[in-house]
Image (tube, rainbow, N blue to C red; front, side, top):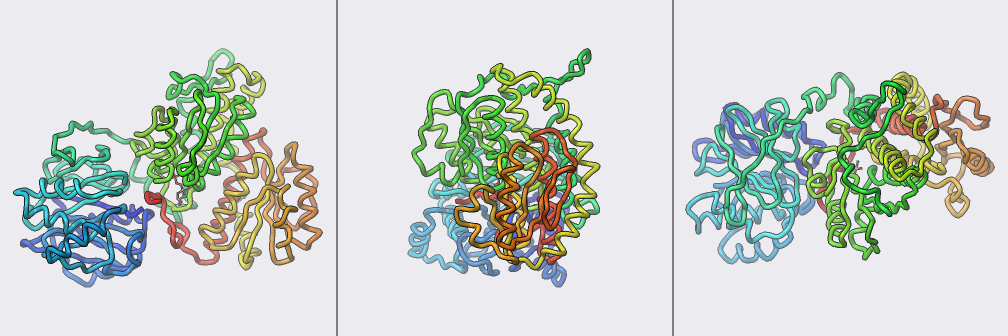
Length: 611
Ligand code: G6P
């Protein structure tokens, strides 16, 4: 949560930082601010609300031409989202401006100590305590580098910070523990930020900063130290292959719709290099070099949050069915505080788009403590999940900017399906016919989905107009469609703020059906599979209580409901890849029609780096 950026280079810092913040705004949007230094003074501009409010404010003032500075977009933790709590925060004497993402857990003790030394505080934040502690450190140390290290040795918690100081023009310091930070290495300019898109237009050369590291950048140099003792750390510069366009809307109204439409490509990209085609037989074989050194696990514990958790639930069906591996799917925030029984031979699979979700990382830590190897399935290269995992499989979905996750889930389903095939084959428990059919049809799936998406969108639009007044929705499904029902409901509530519940269709009659009336519609996953007759009976029960139904279904399925939404039928589990965008599009069109802020829904953040 919160987006941070620090810049030291040759361009005017304020516009560059604000642009960078725009690309990070998905991380938080309660308030924003920027600080630069000129003529030994800090120039600080902050505004409550979205970045547009900061932009507006900046347009009325003369900003400095300073070529270094820091900026922040906030997702409030300590202190309500008003201007005084916005970042950057200044120390008492206004010599240092600091931005912070995370939580300083022992800030109250430190604050009490600083108050006795005469420090006064202007905000309710834990961050302001840290910047003052650094200022105090400066009194005891001859350089800012030492002062930052001195202060960080006293704080507990999670943080990514960046700061500028009046007595060191041209320099930005940054550090992290359990909050994301990456450095961008440019020509005559260097960057630090929470995420790569912040500086993507300027450089694709990155250095991933690890926990406990402290960074010093100027326009012409960068150095990394251990924060605790200032020992220099050797770092590798990596070149990432994301392009700038991928992090822009490319003519679409919202990132979300762009990302929904990218899903055919996401499937192809996730398959790339993972299916080897034998030219003589034309039958593909799943190769997963990332995990080839590992024996298939005896049991799998999937740990994830939000949409990634729903992907895990879906994966359970296939991994159990095809690879005959028992799978437990755990909500990370629950798993981390249990005393789970994890047997030898088990593997923990952490699924995370961002790779920075605090609960998922804590789940990884617990599983590790209990002796389990970790396989990470994540989208962001070099993220914390990737680095904490023993094995890492990247989902290759490209940058996902919209807060509501769409294409990342599609890529997670693809990867889980590959895992089920790979382990099933390696264990010799999956029949050849299913294996080759799955591989074959997976390869054809992107073009089928691509062709269908425009029609899906049109249907979603039509239906959204009819149901936008609804106060509540049920999403029902069975088997592999139950996790999708959960996801459909999550998407609708996240972005349109319409109450929605995902339910296993067979469970409806154990309580929830009491809610059904003519104003409480149901979105049913009634696709053609062996469970369809059961779903059909559940829908009849809903209709008997006067509930209206939209049913996602396939050609030739007999179903008497208000709205049949017919999707082309593909093979078996691949139908999930057709149903998922339909659910996403219905939520998208509803939210857009209702005039909601689709890409940045209220109270949410893309990457939840706090508990
Ligand atoms: C947040 C996002 C969700 C996401 C969840 C897990 O709540 O708003 O879209 O599914 O975090 O994130 P992860 O990055 O771990 O997949």
